[in-house]
Amino acid sequence: MILGIGVDILDTRRFDGVISRQGERFINKIFTMQEREFCARRLRSNESFAKIFSIKEAVIKAISNTSGMFWHDIEVFHNKKGKPFVELKNAALSNLKSRINDKSFVIEVSVSDELPYVCAFVVIDTL
Image (cartoon, rainbow, N blue to C red; front, side, top):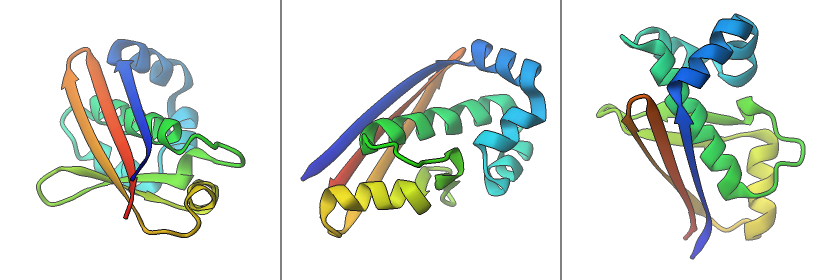
């Protein structure tokens, strides 16, 4: 049963402006160490940051309950083929679990770009 759907679209030019103005303070607030290291290895790191940010926004929309959540409660990883996947921690995980009565769940993530735009789509499904 589909529990939540979230979608986010982001203009990377606007995102670059935020990074230019706020720099490391913004990066450290939003992204985990693993996410920062992943993006630092990429040729166009700001676009990678934008994609991860868009995924996090879509996850937040799919969860629906943001009470007590922080950006680091949603962490984006990539499998060996580059497909993103999400792990929830702390309030993000407990907020989702409170909606599904401890059933198992899966979070499906898709991200795409047509620069300067990136788009993320997330579906949370109970098993």
